[in-house]
Length: 447
Image 1 (tube, rainbow, N blue to C red):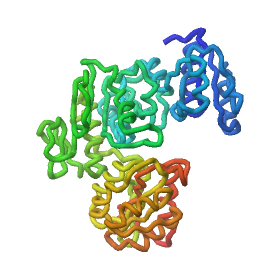
Image 2: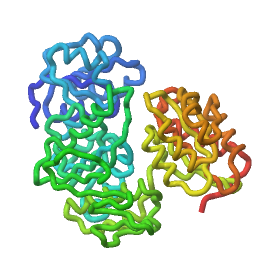
Image 3: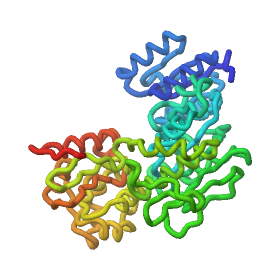
Image 4: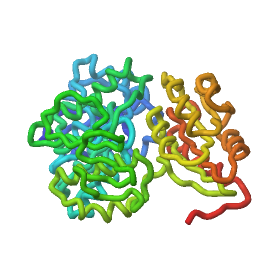
């Protein structure tokens, strides 16, 4: 799309905002970048964009810079209700999301991946499988690499595999993935959405522009409206009718025929079986042979912070699942464990009700060590099911878990909520957990 002569504002100067600004400059737009945060850490990015002809306004001045823009691009990290985003809207400037902008400039087909859990693993896995089968594919979006950055070089790609969140889908209009993947759905982000229905409606926008020529790869356990795209379903749940299923020996089947034993991969648990099914299905929708993708599936290593093995010491296995930021992720992590579990959970109060998990936690775990804003309320919900130990810090939680664990147990760090009451991100939270687990004199290497 040609933006020559158009005046466009980019809201936010993070990595996605900077990539969007470069994409617009390449398209001939007159770009103004607005960021109301602390100017100091943004000076380098501002200088780079200024050298390319963009106008950059930082700090409080950004809140008062409303001109006759044709439209404004919202970076993924900016809340649409924040003053920086509201000011242009109040002035009548249309708001476009960074994903929407990137899609308009993208020159290759798109696999779009959304859902509550499993998005990042499925996105990385799908890109790996497509590349192994001969397609030039790149993973981007909410996975870390901005879609705008990949869109700028998309003419040299066969497929862009885009992880897309509900927040990003809110500001899409023409976004139409060739393959839309719906990993699963459960309550989340209730601190942002008024109710679960609103969160679900944002997610469902991934299907809005699809036609009968496109594909929808969906979890058979999700109740979805009628879709125009060709539907391919998957599930690891027993006694379900789906295109991809999991048998009692943990082998993935496609329409009843064995495809891949989970034991041949580095992925474990029903949730990862579903991630594999979704990735394989996406490849098949693009015309790839399953056999060409199997080797890559066997070699794929899961991303950090998602049921990540950390160490084994004195017979105790330590697992980092810091990416568990909602109750469904916590439940899936627990369901994938065997043997005794000491669970470390808790964090920011996102409005979740932990009581429905009490039976599962009581069945799978011997004790729960609880942290963060939610520690007291979770203890109240779970104390009848198992011993609960609220503590004041992650350091104290690791120390208590070490005291409670016996040889053969697993210490599972799966918070079930976000990190922002104590940490800057789930990555920082997970990294600190891993550091704390190694604060002992001996280590048994994992082989």
